[in-house]
Image 1: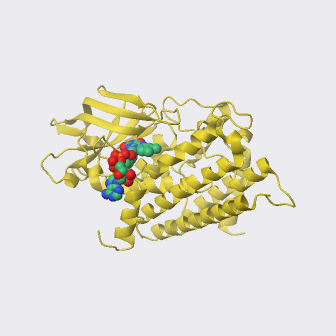
Image 2: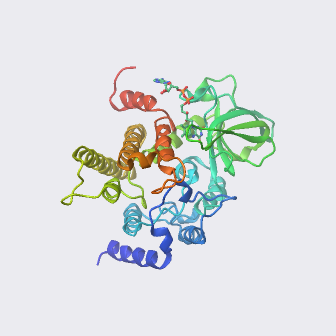
Image 3: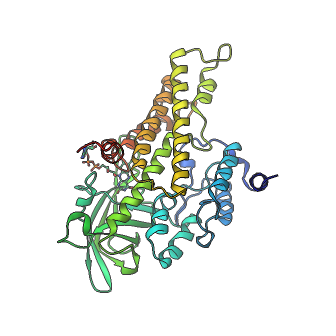
Length: 393
Ligand SMILES: Cc1cc2nc3c(=O)[nH]c(=O)nc-3n(C[C@H](O)[C@H](O)[C@H](O)COP(=O)(O)OP(=O)(O)OC[C@H]3O[C@@H](n4cnc5c(N)ncnc54)[C@H](O)[C@@H]3O)c2cc1C
């Protein structure tokens, strides 16, 4: 038996003993996912138990170093854990912008003090982070941001506003881009700062969407005190941190194109709802579309896998994340077009449908935002054209 075989057995035994039965079922909607945070409302005791057990092992973030609360697993071991969780349909114990976005930036650019302060609570799901990047006049052209942090000697004084803050009302803390040099070229006067959203002067206003939900806020700052030791990287060098974080954000969004652990594959759902004739779906067009989708999703998964190996071997993800983000979000939109087609009229029921609770049309509408968040599809295609294909501007 190799080391990896015995590790797989160890993982399998641990999951068997520790993953509650109800956490091994496909989740119905986003509400079933656990985002943690100070005000987290757990859906069930099992959900909390699952998070606590996974966090104690460091397996909410298996590849982060043990000294920051992570699992300290190598790439091969982390892959085994993922496979074993998928095998029993275990849900992810924790979804988190802290894990997917801030953590990698802190590991690369943060001081040791900042890592010690912020990474362990992220692993344990104690703090929920919100992203303060976009502003009313700074979306695709993010470097035009105007929220200003004036140097007051021992701290910064922050004024301005952010927009489209995902779950801004649920966030405990924010990682935020602010202007700290007002004379420098626009990319050179930006700093990347962290602060608690309960700091006096921070307020949020909900933004309602077509789906009827309001997952966004406007976030307003009026004389907010930001401590100087909460700058990630150097003052005025925040653009470098911001860009690095974006590559991780784009990788996270790209994963929306892949089958999520715990979600029912499209083909299985089709068989379940439509039934089969002689072992296959009757509608040949739909059958072909589903097959094409699942093959494309598998190709994306393998390509991302390969890129991760290359990163591990020293390559930078950089512009490749734009390619993944573009393709992954196109795939996720295709997934939901297929799910809507499979569901037929039922899939349109907004509230209290028999086969589902109205989450399907809302999730379908939500996928439209995939092509905008983390940088629009047009911006990703521009990056691919210039930085991967080497085409002229
Ligand atoms: C679901 C979702 C979640 C989000 N969450 C957050 C969050 O948590 N925090 C946060 O800070 N922001 C968040 N955003 C905001 C997001 O980052 C911005 O919406 C995005 O960067 C686009 O900016 P914009 O909306 O200002 O559009 P604009 O930049 O005004 O773009 C408008 C249109 O012009 C096109 N365009 C602009 N420039 C170019 C160009 N150079 N070449 C070709 N086409 C161009 C764009 O592609 C787009 O179609 C979120 C957005 C969505 C949809």
